[in-house]
Figure 1 (cartoon, helix red, strand yellow):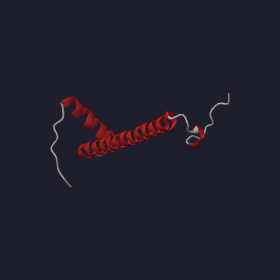
Figure 2: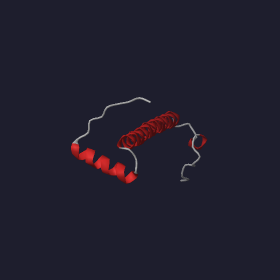
Figure 3: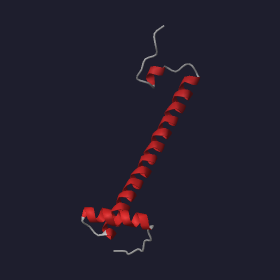
Figure 4: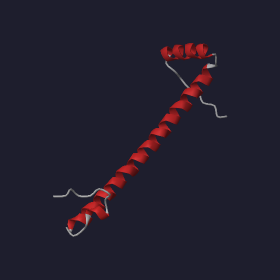
Length: 88
């Protein structure tokens, strides 16, 4: 296990020690749990942003494909889209 030295403001230190007493764990264990939870949330946020980027790129690719296919005017839109064009 790696050891780190952390300096905490007095007010936060009091809150930390009180929370550790309530949780019946050592302040160092509470600090470790808080850091672990924060890192887990940060990693999930990064994964979410990656997925959003993937979806955005997919939508751009799809829009480009539809734009290119329909630019010539001779393309049947129903062949690239499951929705039929409105009947006039």
